[in-house]
Image (tube, rainbow, N blue to C red):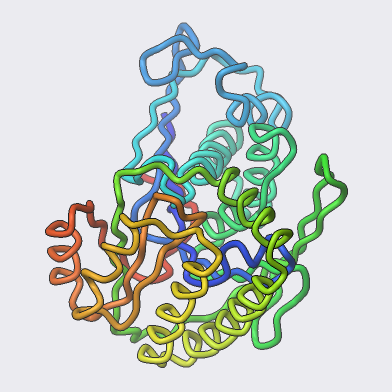
Length: 323
């Protein structure tokens, strides 16, 4: 029996603008997905028969990556992430599965977080008809603070490049990291609206808006500038500046119509107790995130406003084997 864990992620800056070549900044969070593999007499997942067509990302890892031909497996999955909320639950599952199968088939092998990020990215693309950004899988695999962009961002450490053939053509990304101060005195508190975040619909809606109103490209450019400023502040441990950038980013995301009344209500509810707050992910539902030195107060404010809170440190370790 082997167990592996991979964290979820939270985008601090750059959502939607990343689709147009601008950088996105994401951090790994405490909550994530645990996968347990046990040899068995039959293939099962969560107590039900394992059907490869219903789990294309897991099938890709087992068959295409590892060419697994061992005993049937009992696959158990535990997740403390909100589903369909923009926290990278699918990517965390792919990364944890990759790590668990590697440990099962080669117990002496050391985990290579970059290789696991690549495996997870390919698995996500398999499940998403060839379309998948490496943001979620890279952040979950590498941990810490990850920057994904069309080019290497100044002031970051380049880790690896990713490329993929998509239905729209070949896409390329640079994945970089930023070292966070060890004494960072702040927490992230995520607030789930209870409404699923329809990523594809939101991305398509932004594309339609930009085509209809070219002035909205100014908001995309502004998000890129805010992202760079927020990233610099984060690396320097300037929490007040990070919070200001988060607030400014939320206003721009409102301008491109990806927020919602539920998200705005949670953001407003936490502002008195937070350094900054914004929606995180595609929007339209899902989660908001607050940076704060008073996590319990923010969590209580989210509950009072009708959301479900989740408290995390900023930029935790990436995928790992559990003993």
